[in-house]
Amino acid sequence: MRKVKEVHSYVHFHGAPSKGKILMVASSPSVSQQTNWPIGFWAAELTHPLRVFQEAGYDVELVSTNGGKLEMDGYSNPLDESGYSSHDIISLGYLQKPEFTAMLENTKKLTEIDEKKYDAIFLIGGQGPMYTFRGNKDLESLFVNFYENGKPSASVCHSTALLLEAKTSDGELLVKGKTWTGFADAEEDFADQAVGMKIQPYRIETEARKIDGTTFKVEIPFSAYAIADGNLITGQQQNSGAAAAGLVVDQLSGKNN
Image (cartoon, rainbow, N blue to C red):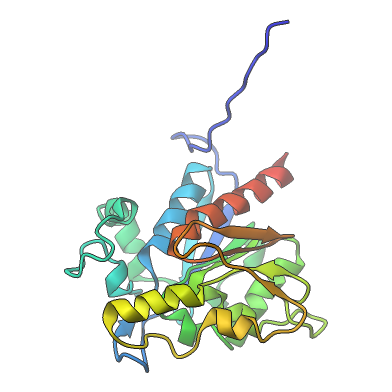
């Protein structure tokens, strides 16, 4: 009997109906107490997942901790004179799109949205979340609501700072009994050495390993690594955003089917 192979692409063809809506959350601009640098979100952690979501046929809304204009971390900008992210052609491509730059100009505050309109939540990392996500009760509540309603709930890189304290409605840490990942200590070492100073006020991996009853895993530094433990999805760092987004799409596709 002749075998037939079917190929289903994630590409969102022009004119195709939207499959749903995904909420992405970024840090509003802040200032690092360690370096005194202006800080915000990491470009690739927005653009790479955004590409995955859009090509899979999902609409995306970007909101922030305080609303208003967003700023990317300088080292994440492919046009930055440091050249640190000059290889990031996906971010470079998005920066040529007026609708993308307009998205960054005026975001809603995360408390202003109706969460029932979204099928999944995705937290964008960067240097800002180390200050603006951890202990943010509004963001904890929003993320936990998505999680407890069975929706894909994703966090990558330093945005996993939220998971160090976020608790479910029964008062337990959300990560209790979970396997998850985030920015690794070895990656912090690399970043600190690259700029010649301690960048972060604390370290995700160090703090996560102090938590009883949870499993924090990391892979080779700066490799694409993401974990789905139930509907909690985490990615290790900026190179893991697309992988984490793919896990979100996989779970949504399973629901749709």
